[in-house]
Image (cartoon, rainbow, N blue to C red):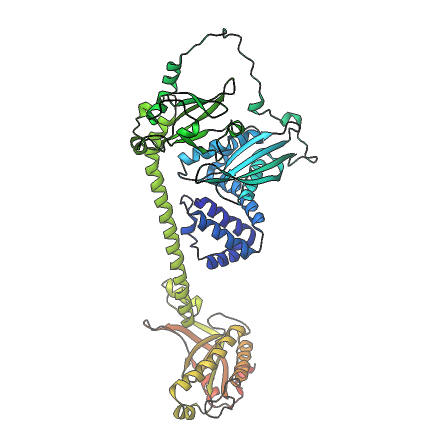
Length: 569
């Protein structure tokens, strides 16, 4: 599947469940938020389906709910990507839209999304109720009918303001050739009416007769039994045509078919010449009637080494006596493919736009490759930018552990950081008998003691909104009102002091096992703050207030908080 589906799933999850859920899904799946969501990149079906299973399981929702929701959103998503006008012009009503949907799929396969495996749709009206349609959905992928229902519901809403109800009539598997099977689901689609109508009743003026039901009167200008064109002339105009009957027996074919299948000398069955590759269904007269409004594609199976696999694309015309005329032309996408099939541009009729498309595709393929590379490069740049942002956050966290965020911001801006504060409160603490502890304990025990205690103190600085200036050995220094001015700085620092005395008792003495005791001193007064040094810059405080706070601590009592008169006031 193309990355458009991946991007649609991502957008749907983000819109309905938010960024956190999406990040969780990415972590569980291991998907890259850029490389897995390139719109024009084709991904294996299994990778897409496995990712969908993870999304559904993590969100705790049913697969049907998820697929239908993504299907509805896919229409809005494609409109945003610029495909809305293309979809809107497919038909005058919902029936005509469904009849022409396969034609759009076929066009996209040959232009924007080469190699895409699209589903196929056939639509018929209920003979008794014009508001009821029967839609046959064919897909090579199993279990995605809810996605189709959601997409069709979104198209009905966006382009026809129409409310519709879907009912699954049956689900079956059909063999389309010796190796491939197609999953066939028939829906009953009831057109309930306009979404803005209170009664949801279809107005008679809104019912547009489908092209298939228009009766064409026979021409009175054509004399009976007069042939205006011979078989040879018709074959020259349409070299790749063939006519077959109800039993799929070929009754006539053009010389182009003879070029592609040179070994054919009689009139075999269609199945002996080629396989039906579009729409995804078995080749039978009944299915030909069902899909009569679609563009058919046949792949040559009875050709030469070079012509085998050539796809003929064209329309079906129903003739008298249950005969069907296929008017086709080779479906080639590039000059290289034309040469590989031993064909020339002159082999394609002048009336067929394939001539122009081949030349256009040759030019556009270069643009498409460039667009793919550009999208991949953009994704790589986004991933690099995201990694750079993560590294920047790590650097900022490290820098902010050394300097206050506002100070770090000024330094990065090239400003000189030095400021005088009229009033601030400074705290010093140390561990009682730390010199004895250090002399009798192993170094790792000292490190563990300080780490355990300071980790608790650091957490307290966050809750008390104070700034930890530094630690030197067993000394711990805190300030309030610097670098951010605050009128209640003394209250904050004293709160920090009370917490520190309490938290210190939670740490065991490495020798005795008793609770550790600390001394705390606090003083309030003016101070100057600034960044000192370049290799290991530190945010330092200067002034007599720092000295007095240190003396308050050294002359304090174990397990108590010694505050100055200024701090008390």
